[in-house]
Image 1 (tube, protein in one colour):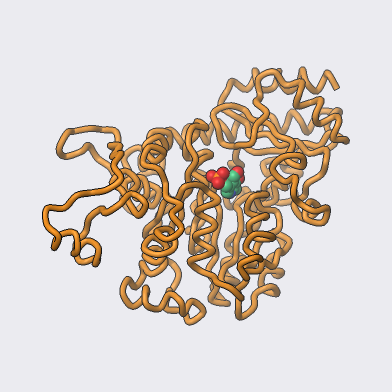
Image 2 (cartoon, rainbow, N blue to C red; image 1 turned 90 degrees about the vertical axis):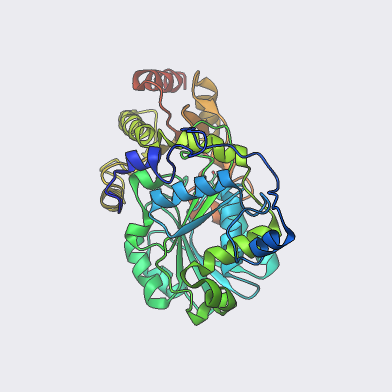
Length: 416
Ligand SMILES: Cc1ncc(COP(=O)(O)O)c(C=O)c1O
């Protein structure tokens, strides 16, 4: 329950917005305006100088984005947050607000392929290097931290490896070393876990996935838990922001500098769509979890499947950690191995309803062959680190009736 004593199911619907005072509108209003006019030059000067509250330009903020950000903050029990044009933008601007040339990231090695590429390749060109560690090896994080480390990065569930790091234990190391812990909560959402409760300092979302829930808009979100002391000399570049904004130093630097200058802003229309989608997140997650658990058990019994990975299976190596962290619910993602790439392709091609596409967290059941798509640029050693094999298939289990999901999978497996 939140500070206001409301369950998350209720916060999803009522958090940070009540009917509009002027119109009584119950749905968060879409303000599709680039700029905001002020009566006098003095008024606009005051807003630019931060002496008066107000919106200036939708690259920096906008009333619809503001309400969406506030609701996301309520859900993650955060201090403040900033929305961005995508999940990748959220990760990029977070790194750029915390690190510069010569600095380092310590990251779990089983993260989403796009983030792996950003950390392992793109950022290196700008002087930020990443030390990848085995995601579930807690002590490896301690060993990898140096004086130049500016953040530790984790996902709540490795994708597509499906491994589950002990976030609280890694957070204790981050705290001891005075390094910010950033956790990507895209695949579990605050319905399954609030990373702040496990002492994560910054929470990231690709809101394109479960938050939106219907595969119709791309967006991202960064939330500061309010747990980190931004006067820490490791982050001396944030000193002027700290002197002015204190606990809000990181979010202020993010919005007023990095995101403003890079321009990867969230569209108000996407924020509107997500605000509608998010209201049903709790019931959707419940159904994603029960459907995925049933599929995982079905696949575990099939003699056509070499291996299926789902943290909810008791045989999963991280089952106990997942159970503790996510309250006995394990999300909608799972993987299976079918022996060869050719068999995996035949299986995907044989599915009648599951859609073969690059996304997750949709109402529809989605399937993909990660090695030939999302992670196709990864080297062999990177693929090994990510737990990626040529015969691996990933499902994002949707909200359809479980009998129909199972019968689709069953008929395609029978065709192998
Ligand atoms: C865990 C995770 N984080 C971040 C991203 C990137 O999000 P976006 O596609 O919104 O840029 C993805 C995309 O699949 C993801 O799965």
